[in-house]
Image (spheres, rainbow, N blue to C red):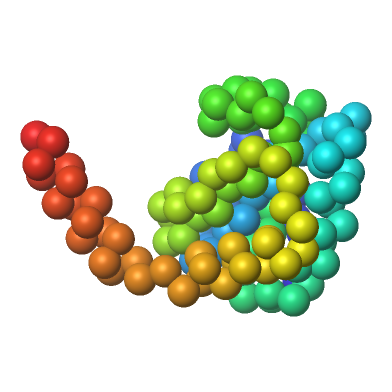
Length: 123
């Protein structure tokens, strides 16, 4: 699957409507972003069962600001609507492929139960 462009208008629906979503926050002037772009695209083609989305931080400043993006590239991964990974910096192909496999392999029922228990203890 090729990457898809995400905007403020469709970001929430993209996360909500898909099981596994990876989002690359980037800008055209950013050298590391330009280096990571082909890696992101290549890995997306090997994993058609996940959504690989790109957010141009120059065009989508309100979205990037609202999510606290202060350094690019920043990569976020969502599973069943939950943010499960967020890190600034470019990954190489093997690192990113490993991350994709880890996110897909997450035991979401266990994570949800742990989150509920943590919330109950906080209240």
